[in-house]
Length: 248
Ligand SMILES: NC(=O)c1ccc[n+]([C@@H]2O[C@H](COP(=O)([O-])OP(=O)(O)OC[C@H]3O[C@@H](n4cnc5c(N)ncnc54)[C@H](O)[C@@H]3O)[C@@H](O)[C@H]2O)c1
Image 1 (tube, helix red, strand yellow):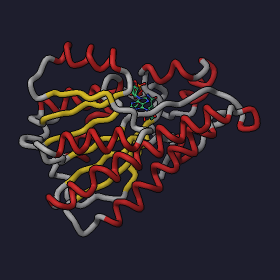
Image 2 (spheres, protein in one colour):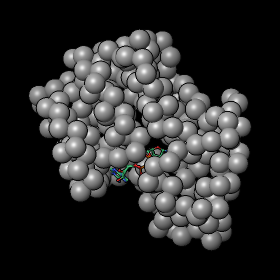
Image 3 (cartoon, rainbow, N blue to C red):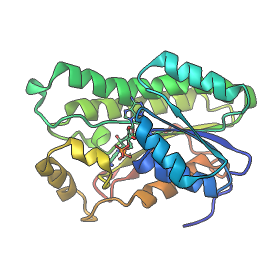
Image 4 (cartoon, rainbow, N blue to C red):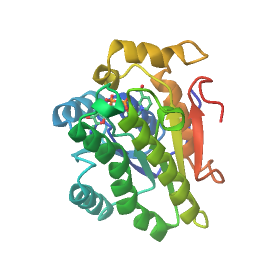
C-alpha cells in the first residue's frame, strides 16, 4: 500500500471497532495520525484498543444515532485536540425483506444509524473544521445507495441519503480547505454481512463484474487518500468502489 502522510492530524472514525472502520484506523495510525474510534459495541471497542496497543489510539462508546452522545464526545475531544478528519463508517444493513413486509422499527433504526448518525457527526464536527479552515470528511455510503438493492429498501434509502448529504455539505464547505466525499463500496466480508440472508449476499456478489468481494484494504486505500491533504480539490463527490457494478 502507498504511504499517506497524516502526521499531526486527529481523526474520528465511527464504527471503528471492527470492519472497514478498524482497518482504516490501523492505517491512519501507521500514517502518523492520532485516532479516536467510536462504536456502540463496548466489548469490540476494548478488544480493538487492546490488540492495537498504540498510544495514539483512543476510543469512546458512542451511539451515533443519539445526537447528545455525539455532541458530548466531540466536545470532550475538541477541548484538547483539533479535529482534522471524520470518517463516518458506523452502519447496519438491517434484515432482508420486501418493502411491504419491512418492519417499521427496523426501518427507523437503519435510517437513524446510517443517515441521521452521519448528519449528527458532521453537524458536531464541521464548526471545528471551519474554525481551523481544515477538514476531510469521508462518508461510507454503499453501491446500494446508487443502484438500490431489492429487499434492502431501508438501507438503500439511507445510503442514498448519505450521498445527498455529502453533495450538499461538500458544496456548503467548498470555499474552505474542507473536503467532504462519499465512497460506495460493493460487498466486503465483514460482520455486517451476517445481518442479511446468504441468498441476498450471493445476489449482491453476482452483480459485481470483478466477480469477487471487495477487500477491506482496498476500501482503506481509497479512504486514506480522500482523508489526506493531497485531496485538495475533490469534494461533494462520490467515489465508486463497486468493482464495475456501478458505472457512474
Ligand atoms: N461490508 C460491506 O459489504 C459494506 C458494503 C457497502 C457499505 N458498507 C458500509 O460500510 C460501513 C462499515 O461497515 P462494515 O462492513 O465495516 O460493518 P461492521 O459491522 O464490521 O462494522 C460496523 C460497525 O458499526 C458499529 N455500529 C453500529 N451501529 C452503531 C451506532 N448506532 N453507533 C456507533 N457504532 C455503531 C458496529 O458496532 C460495528 O462495529 C457501514 O456504514 C456499511 O453500511 C459495508
